Image (cartoon, rainbow, N blue to C red):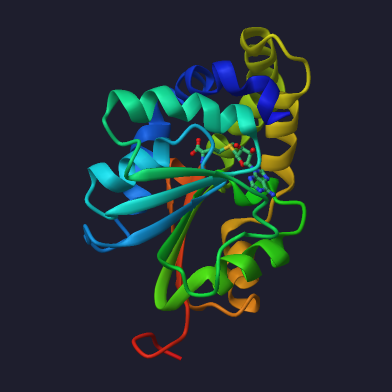
Length: 229
Ligand SMILES: C[S@@+](CC[C@H](N)C(=O)[O-])C[C@H]1O[C@@H](n2cnc3c(N)ncnc32)[C@H](O)[C@@H]1O
């Protein structure tokens, strides 16, 4: 599915979110400390926008942008080249449920709009925990659902009626944007997602919402020498 939408993915991301996706990524990454030496995994990295923001915001020195869609990673290449980041952002085609990296290989793991797509959320978080060093931080940015009645009604209307039509029309594919709307509706709400992150073995899980609850950013720590139990 992601291979199919890759050529128009960025355009649709910016259009369907009224360009808010850029500030959501920026604000989520503000939860990581500045560290230009950090090795960071951008899981479900897609077309590389979070990887680029990790370097630009000085949250990483080197990034591995990992995704199982060849076409999404291919779409990242010209952007990285244009910004002269091809050497600092390594693109790796792999499944997030079976990561090809040794234990404790990263100082941080960041995922934007990715965990909702994982076929097995618990296993995905288990892999993130494994490849993170003790004391390292996880940042998860994901769609959520507004709780205020008026906004919640408007959002449901947008998800059900507008987003799938616009998305399918512009991408030229029928299905992916209906999938997007459906998975946003079905995915655990922010408090429940925090519980799933904790159950997977992470500590100090915190979260906040943005844009009235349209998205949520979670952070958590891998227990270890410099992390709370
Ligand atoms: C909605 S896109 C998000 C892309 C990017 N992180 C962003 O911020 O725009 C979700 C990405 O997750 C990837 N993905 C879904 N399941 C995956 C898995 N099991 N392993 C690796 N990548 C996966 C898809 O290929 C897709 O590129």
